[in-house]
Image (cartoon, rainbow, N blue to C red):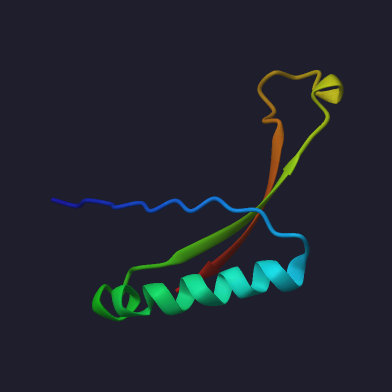
Length: 71
């Protein structure tokens, strides 16, 4: 049987420098898990709010994502 555990941490950063500090803290905090479970990965996403008035297709999400994956 395969299972997946997901941990979600939401935060706001003023700029990429501050976001980088959060990335480093999360990587350091999860390093033991990443060593113990070889398939463990950390996905780091930038989320940007889109103007809802410009969203003419309701299937398009109102948030844009950029993802960085650490394995």
